[in-house]
Length: 148
Image (cartoon, rainbow, N blue to C red; front, side, top):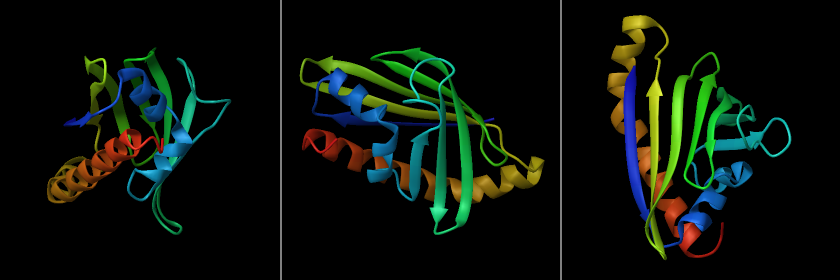
């Protein structure tokens, strides 16, 4: 398993951050190269299903997920069930004050292809983390501006 965890400060109340982070379709506005949508209904609650395509044009991969923990307005865990991305992901919103929060994005990834996947991810990890960090910074700006 590979663990990745990033935190971004957001100058907004925790509920506003939660509402923005669990608006799955809106993730397409801030998550680099990714389009997200719920599969059934609004994709909320334990058992809700979400899909995300990451890539450019038709080159990329589909990430299928099922919500395993739903503790609104603080935590959502998903189980990645796709061919490429497997493992668990967590979105956590931590209230810092009535007007500010921290959003913690973490993944425990079960890499495909054994040792080859581990070596490949070691090489790709810095770029992956950079992209996620930039995406989270954009998320914070959009929430603070009231655009999400």
